Image (cartoon, rainbow, N blue to C red; front, side, top):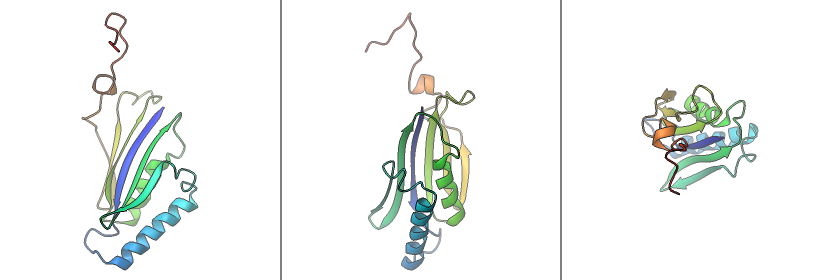
Length: 141
């Protein structure tokens, strides 16, 4: 299963705060989501909301298998290319990935760049989040 959690504060610039360019950027973002079938196809997994005057995109999903291309990473990549002011985090865990099944993957979006980082908060998955079954020491629940 692939577990996905991410958020982006949508800002067209890391310097300017004019309302018209911000509205245009958010409109382009909505159009991107619609044109790529991410929205409304995955609308139940995503929210685009305004909190205290700031647009925020959130995504939470649990899929049986990873998609190709991996649409959450595609969304974050598009925002990185289209704005220097947006920032956020994407965390996901794929228990079917033979190389990374024991780690959360983390991507950081800031200042027009998307970079991968090591996760030290929830990884390794078996130890930090869940323990592997041990017949000699079964879970109490």
